[in-house]
Length: 149
Image (cartoon, rainbow, N blue to C red; front, side):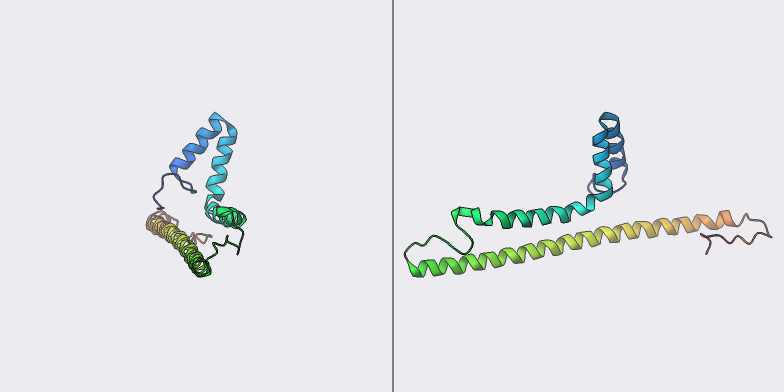
């Protein structure tokens, strides 16, 4: 997953165009695109929560056995080994889930840092162009406004 996706939950030319086209074709499509633009970054957390909930619900249905109970083979040594292996695999799965969450947080932070960088660049370019317009003020004008610093 990269930040260079054409359609991502942000105000990009592609998402704005899709929203306008959606409103022109069938207004609920435009409304859905607007909702995606506004609240799309929350979708990752929602998907993760739904996946966890469904994994927990359907974990009992896997291979026809219930949590903590597995069909016995009659061989105690094999059954003990299998139980330990299943515990080890479940621990690995928990570690992988934690790593996935950490990676999602990392990507979210990268996206935020990129947005901050773009905003800082915009403000720097804006501040370069602002002095040219303020130098044309009258001598008696103090020029104290909300945006002047």
